[in-house]
Amino acid sequence: MTSYDHIILGTGQATGTLLGRLIATGDTIAVIEGARVGGSCVNYGCTPTKTLVASARAIHQAGRGDFFGFRSGPIRLDYARVRARMNEIRRAGSNGLTEWMESTDNVTLIREWASFASSHILRVGEEAIEGKRIYINAGTYPFVPPIQGIAEVPWMDSAGLLDLEERPGHLLIVGGGYIGMEFAQIYRRFGSEVTVVQRDAQVMPREDADVAGAVQEILEGEGVRILCKATAREVSRQNDRLILRVETEQGSEALEGTHLLIASGRRPNTERLGLEAAGIQTDSRGYIEVDDYCRTNVEGVFALGDINGQGAFTHTSVNDAEIVLDHLFGGPRSLSDRIPVYALFTDPPLGRVGLSEKAARASGKRVLKAIRPMSEISRAKEMGETQGFAKLLVDADTDLILGAAILGPGGDEIINMFAAIMHSRIPCRRYREVVLVHPTVSELMPWVLDGLEEIND
Image 1 (cartoon, rainbow, N blue to C red):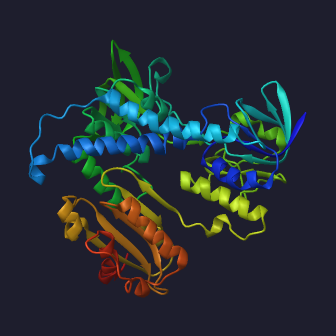
Image 2 (cartoon, helix red, strand yellow):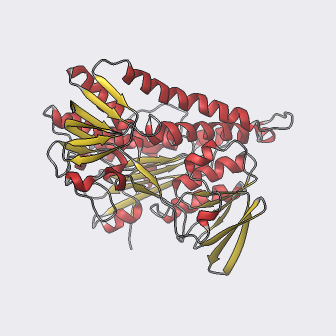
Image 3 (cartoon, rainbow, N blue to C red):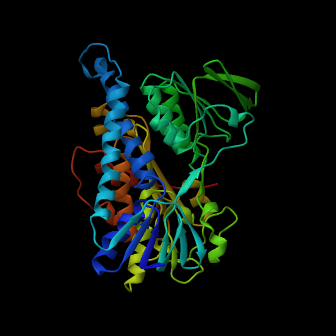
């Protein structure tokens, strides 16, 4: 049996971060991957979808010539070229990581599925390997809701949609979360009809109602049909069409489309890992339980990325790896120090950090709130992008920012400024003193604070 100093299960973004530090130690490292190298971000998440977002935005902006003062010929989508560009970028990411591992002397890339035989022994194909330290970075898989007939019809998850060679004529989307919203706008801008079926009373149910409502209004304004409080009950196929029966408050409705995307959440890839053989504990949802340093209950075994339930983003996976490495080399970083930050990459994008308004209200703190519409920000008006708003939440007693939501041009970038402010615990009055570049959207963010008022239930 071959023994390694480190075994990494999966090649998502936490793996590259681990390798960047562990390779330099000279320790022996095995990396195991049964699917595409690079994990979800590179292959069917961030990289390909944001490439599509860029293409869709370019098409959308080209269609606004009259607004900006120019005219051009008819816009024709070349979906094959859109996909080729996407594939060039995502394959480069996957191939680059593969070549790096295969060309590094103390790294062995094993292209197999693995499961635990004991706490530090893994079955990999027909062999067994042993690791002093093991890092589980196996990610998640799409959840399929109980829809009658789903096993008898062709349906897609996000990976399947990205591999689809033809543009959908009418894309039915089950799930109005972040993935569903992004794909709805992308394919509507590509010329597809799009209908979203959302079980909850609002899209993106984790968000405040004003944020979710604004995103829904933007997409509906572009022609996306969104049904909230709607449950997909049954799906069938009639010739080349799919019939999705949904239950709404108004009764039953049959939706007819050409393609079906299931975007109703994800579940951890823990079932096939044989965790019980290692004695590794999971929670009621199947996520691996970890402490503040991503350690499992088994000594020397860590769980990083989506599979530990502590975050569902590439940047949180990378941060998990940074925390593990810091811990291994004697540092103090921990999960409890992390302030949640993320973005929804619709156009305009939504950036979010810290507490939502509903979470802030429930915190027991005295909360101040300020909102400024993008329609009141000069740079947004100059760019012709006035949809959305900025919302800031502040602790009335400490003058520290509790949370922010930026829906508007550059919201996905601007939110990083607030993440840095919150991490550094800079009081609002000090932030208000900072000189920022004019004319920008971000320069108005300190001025938003002038409108702070206490929230009263």
